[in-house]
Image (cartoon, rainbow, N blue to C red; front, side, top):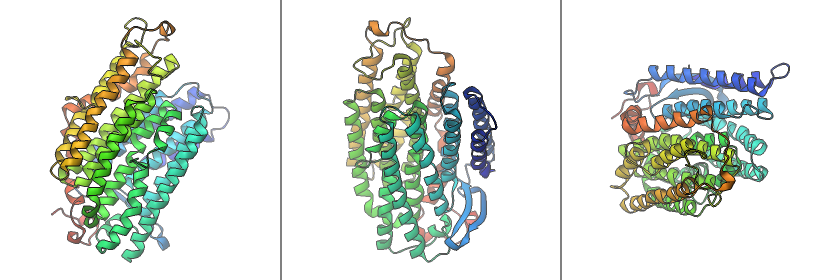
Length: 499
């Protein structure tokens, strides 16, 4: 069942790419929609098969591949990974639906989107470290082309910067994985086998260092963040949605799965430094967002600040904070995707994202009132207004982290407060006031263009009112993740019990 989430988009990409004869952009989009819908339906089926009360890896698939180097095709999901797999399927469907019907080089575009979906799902489901790395690297190639071909004026620079940063990230992660396998003396890179094998503390610290830097680039955390604003500004709206909504989560997922899961004994020695870095990153991202004039850059720097909350929760390493980290990943994915979609609509209808140029777009007759209302809802969710998913996520993060790192948590709380400042500045300048004459005859926003943002808005409100629907998915897994390696049995994942 899990393999279908990897193989169907790959086969779909091949079909679209090598379809005999001419394939019109609209038909290409329709075919991609069918494939994405099938993926989403399969994800829903897996949802009913998944047992949230079971902390073990479920729906496992394992096939020997290249046994000489310890690589196997090993898949599985648990409460930590499956919410992200679900989010990936949802955002891919939304992105394909929201893409232009008259897109140039549409066959290549939709094939890349499907390959990207396959790589991300594979990374979240991989139970072999080398397999994770292969899927991690797979998503780099399509994202590079998506930015370089369909991006803005400086797309070449932004795409190359992304490629270089992510390539360095992959090298560092692979170095850590290879060192772990070599020093463990095992013949494979199975996650469960490596987690059950305890290394000396000094060795764990040495191996953890490159892993943290590699994942820190992907998250991204200050000072490894500089590729992200450029990538967002130059990327098209659908690519920005995928980048902020799901691709950044590969870094935070790796932090929880491998940083804590494989090096739990060493984790406590570096967490004070990481918590301080999280506080710095949160304040830096929020401060930069305040002074931006481009709406997309405001949301991009906001992502840096909000991803830092996940790092803070991970450093606290309590059951509540790890649950909060997973919830924050989904929360940020939904909110950032919605904000980028709405910024894209504003840019499409006005031709600008400059907060000093745009005025009065909330005008009910000649402006973009519904788009503005949805933007206000998204801003409120990001600022942590009660009743929305952002409030629950941030409350859990700060509640779980404060007992362990009170000072760093307070600084992150300041960063959270600044969210209201920079988003209110943006909304006040762009949507309120008198509509300028240059913007008095804006094209109408069709309901089909609003549907993706409305779907995300519904998810944001529902999870804000019923957070238990998601929290219950990963609570059992968190206990197992925080179990010291020395207390783990050497049995397979199927036979693991939580102490």
